[in-house]
Length: 165
Image (cartoon, rainbow, N blue to C red; front, side, top):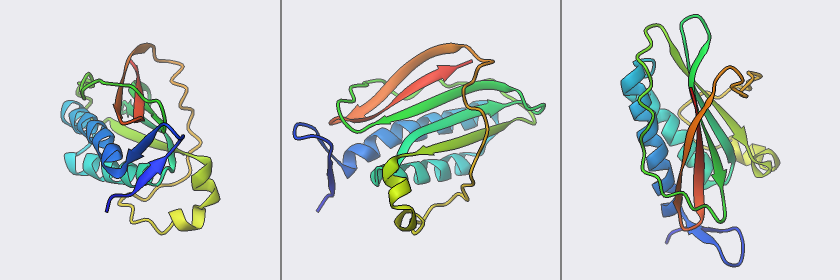
């Protein structure tokens, strides 16, 4: 039996809907890994695993993915903002063929929902693959320019992606 989450009386989505949306995010992460060489495909899959698990529990508000140069400057970024109702993005994964960045790194920062904060003990028991630590990094991407957007959705659940370069 599939679990379902209800946001309103008119919008209901299932675990399968969350999985569909996260598959698109995972595809983006794998493309970013392949083009930048700043992240392995295995690590991209681990990030996607944790994002999916947290999203299935309605614990994620936002995921910030940033390509950082060897000198510490931001080169590209994608912000995924999760919607639990009325999401309507129909985009396909892609548009994230970021530049090869020798010595660079990919930084992933999660922003949690109030539900996560209220259920912190329960959330701490999830089997996450990454060791997430608090971050105080500025994710406004003020040195980058907005370069587009796309959204992924299924039955009202979705993630809107904003791109910066």
